[in-house]
Length: 214
Image (cartoon, rainbow, N blue to C red; front, side):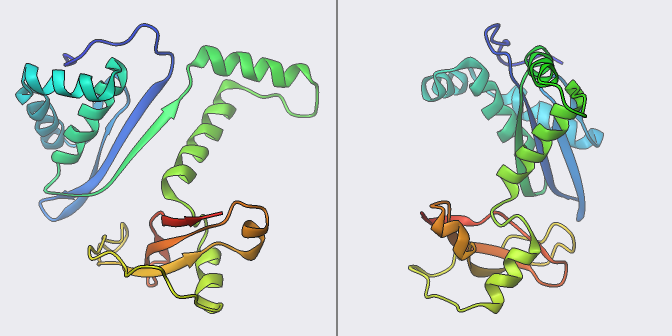
């Protein structure tokens, strides 16, 4: 495929963009791994059609806003993946360090000895988990939500959002709750609170819209 902007030779990291949405009433996904698109052909064609429709003025405006060619490419692919669905449900961007950097880090960890031998694959899995946590939480577990629901409910500083995100499992609209992390997180100055959409039936949630941070 032809990119609308060239790679930045100084950029060592790669970015993956994953969209989840509805196509003909069914949930599907589309993924750009920094090099190619993966997903149903109709979604890939819609994505490429949007990229092909961009004018030079669109690109110049984005470059002025981002001030970075690589970041600009990511922005366009995020927009293109999002627009490929009849209705986008979630958009998820991951950052991965280069294999060369990860290999050096694994070698440094292994040089300290220990029972475990670290590989590049181990570090990639750690990056995937960290990326998911950054996208998906807080909260990071349903137990945190149950603790919040069963505890004393403090008044929120503002009304809940008016939109109703869909649960990614059952696709029903989710309800908003005022989430506050545990007392221990506030004591350690890492507390978070804000409106969070949840689905009690599927025990799923979306990231807290953080409004209070300690």
